[in-house]
Length: 266
Image 1 (cartoon, rainbow, N blue to C red):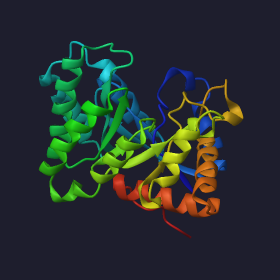
Image 2: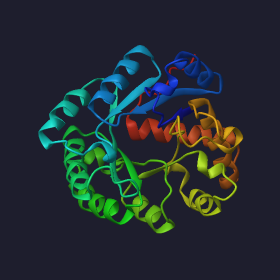
Image 3: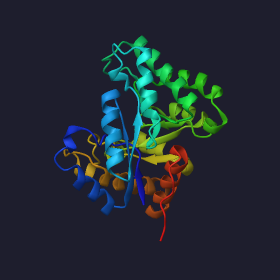
Image 4: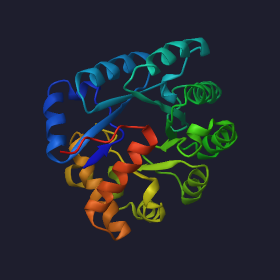
């Protein structure tokens, strides 16, 4: 059993075969999928899909590349979305200094405001960090001590982790989980694999970030939740344990972080 903790299932690249994609995931043991939003409209779609499919959940918020021109007052709409029973996190939020579709100051303002929202609603966060580790971690280090007790041990996840080892160590010290995606299967990703190998088993999550970051086995094609199994297999190799143990650990981690109800067993 696996949980794909990050797939943009609402993106148009899945419009033609979304139900088949979910079915293929189930065949590979992927029982639940978390669909993070990038803006308000995206969140509306993610919540509709969560209503439509029992195993799909949503996260809501503004991606850093979607923050240009957004006013703090508009987060009232995100708060309304977050009250949906299948909205289980605020995300994906953070900083992106690689593309900078939005000025750094604007990204930081919306990031901090969404952190405050997550704290107030007692929801974990899904962090997007691209070439912004120093600022992301400084902001998080100031935020974590202010958290309510319910979030102290589960503040959120550093999604699709690709930062240096020091950033991993800092994030773990703050209580964060680390999510790994297809790149840990790439031939030139030795540094990333070394980081994944040192992350404690109870802090690991598996993701696709579909439709992006397809694992080596299908590289060049659209990514989809079924392929999260390849990420799990690589993590099992790196931790020198069997795949079933990685499935069990990452599923328990996702259930704990996002307060997901365990699946009923027959």
